[in-house]
Image (cartoon, rainbow, N blue to C red; front, side, top):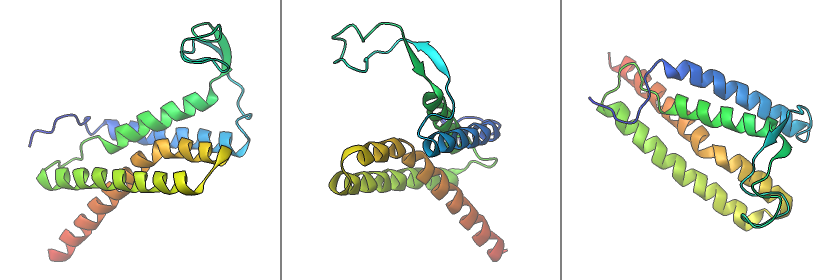
Length: 160
């Protein structure tokens, strides 16, 4: 079966490494109020901290920023995408079906959680929920996809 838009199998291990490093860094940053790593770098923000979209001196000018949280987010996103969307060793129609159902299921669960957060969480804790919500589609998809693969392989071994 020809699979479009999937990465080669060998990218999965690299994805797991990036994902775990990003999760570790992110956990350290969240536990220590984002002050544990102080990686100050000159950045070129599209939107400045005290400005509107492209409207004041803070936008489109170089400024110094701690990029540790951005690094953690990038590692989690790239690692999660590589883990979730790398081919399995035996990619067939059944695995394709599991992948698609897991992605749809993860999207539904993600937006159900977001809807509950919109109704029940307010102020700065809501901002934290939004940060975590950026990654929940990937996490739920990866967990469900691999659980369903495990479950189907276990069921196949019982039939043999």
